[in-house]
Length: 483
Image (cartoon, rainbow, N blue to C red; front, side):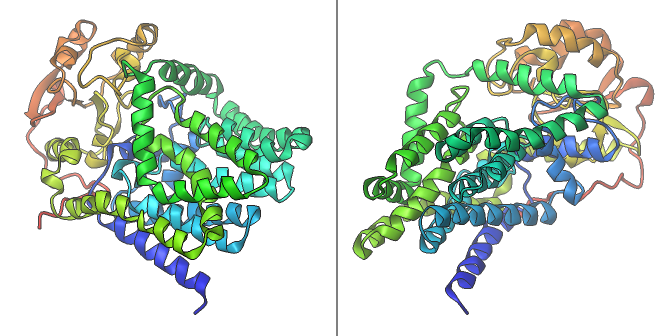
């Protein structure tokens, strides 16, 4: 068996094993696109019928496996991670050699296997953009400016940071800027036409770009620069092998300045909005893995062996998390909200009948796939109607978007979901649903039918009934392995 085949089989085994350890777990970052994907499969249109503040293909890709959780979700994540590894290898090969490509694939695979689970497992916009990022650079380096632009433009359907990918393409193809921009415009225009046909183009602009711009300007950190430096240094430590290879590549290549600009542009993308969440660093991982692969291929053997020893850092730090997810998920602090949602979802499923709907107060989107219920309002969480952003609402009641709340509240008041789950009040009493004056009359049509440590379940008064039998089947419910 040749070396390349062995490499890809080993990478596939590593990625599959680390993902299957979480087969009975649903991370909150996965709940939001799963909830939106279920609405799409039910015939609703994003932005027009469902408030969704991310680009459309973020939710759309989850429809490919029926917005199911469990095994299908983890296998899909494995395949996508392998795709990212392959595109990183193509970019490094285009810039240097096949050997550099193999090292880039290894660095990418290890980063996906041993990192913060909520970031590395979930197919978030930052992860979904990665293969388009790597392929766009590979095509640009290979002298195909139009197709490099197409790749970057296609990535815009997953993440608005595709604009930074466009900038990376122009590092190598600035002389062909017209062809690059034409390629970038093609998928963007096609996506815009589809949204216009759906009657949701204006709402898309408001929810993704206007709301997203407001969100990006409103950092939750008191000292964002210091926080960004601290988190970036931590990330550099976990990616020490790639960083060592990147330094070597910058030292030995004559076009080092192009790689440096690419790295700086990607670091700027991480800092957009001054949030520095772990998932944001996937934009930077692409050039670090590619440049790191180039550097590792050029290093003397003894230097390479020393650099590879640094892979112990992320393995030691994050490997135990896979074991905890497999054996101790119910008592793992990182999954406390998920464990609480499973208990609350069981209460809802015991009472629910076919056709019942749900609204979740707070940012607990995992409730939708866990209960198997569709949304009974245009909103999947409380942010658009409370104006309090989810990156702080567990500890703060600061209203960041009062004008949005005033605009959206009438749409919520006009709705009548069968179930309401307040997943926020137990953590931040000032934001409890029962304490929101504009919603008191609306909530008076509901009564409390269940409670967990972190959730209160309400049911329409006129529809309250004894638990139905048999229980409403829910799709592929994640279960916690309590071994």
